[in-house]
Length: 274
Length: 274
Image (cartoon, rainbow over all chains, first blue to last red; front, side):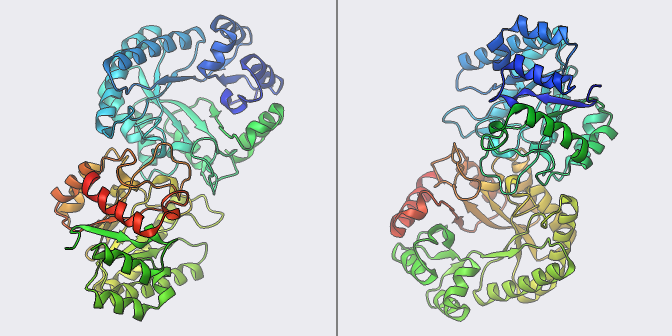
């Protein structure tokens, strides 16, 4: 009996398993939706990854990740666009629901975030025709403002949706509660995203108090302060009915535990706390 | 010859000096504007602090801080309001330009940030008549979203200005570049704040890459990625002509250096990087 509505982003168990092992562990616990990272795909090979996905009838709720568009020079920007086209092809081979875009922060040495944001919009525009042709929706993931400098200069749902509106079809957003839970405009922007058919993914974890590391101290659902049930209700009311995808980076805690226990906890908390 | 346009928030040298020593060190380097924290004032006594300020003709660009309105019960909320009234009186005794409000995060055990935000607006409304009577403007300081849970659930300038518009006169914002530099709506909201006469303070420091601690790893101006000159231009174009106030919490670096060198560096960077 499949665990309906739950997807496991394989970063959650990346220290315990390679992609093949992670899928086996998910299947043992009746989880039939996953989201791999590209390095995990590359480590076992794209064709083997695609075969495992197809043979097991898995839903791939997203491929992580494209993006990283802002670069200090034209060669860097062109290389990013090439790599994003490859990522689109990989997402298509895996039959993924979307390619998640972490758009990139400031180029080295830059203090010009407005310019970085322009480069991001231009980069996405450049790859969008390829994505449309491949049938892979692009999911801009607004990242928490604490990552604006080094990971993503798209930091609110409103900003991401403005880019979507600019670019037209074939693009939407990945809503990760960790990045957006604090936003005073969250409710209205979820509604807006739903009305535009822009919600492509719903990622979950929790915000711990205190948070001891900016990147690798995400919490298990229920251990923090995010109103997961409320955000889920808003996202579902806006029309998104896909799985919730658990994505937890946790160097000090969950990455140190046995993978099967982490997965069991994800399932348990998905049922009780989300 | 005074260092025009520079104020030192005394938290910047809080590990090196008490309030009296910090002011002496500032005066030695011709800094004539300061902003103390209440614990620093209490440590030497309010009347003594007020005497030092008055005797030296210092500008007090703000008293840090009131706020912390959200509480789990009515008694907690009432205690916060009482304490804020005392803070207003202290700001008046010091002839401060404003009382800075760090509004508070979620009450313990709560996941309801919308309710916390309601409590904040109600708390500010409750103390505003006292502030007006004392002639002390209240400066809501929107804090970076990474502090939404535990320090301040007002996280953007837009949100802070919405509260100001709701409450009327005698209230504005403290714009700290560290908290707002990432905001895609920063420019338009600075203009809005200026048009409404709402800019009461301008705090500076820098965002380091990487940032190793959520609270105590702020950078010296010029050492990070914030476009300090650009934000200053926007704030001055919006009509604010007061000092820039340096506020650096830096457990691993600046708090460990000799106070006079920290102050000299603040002056140097204020001239070259801001």
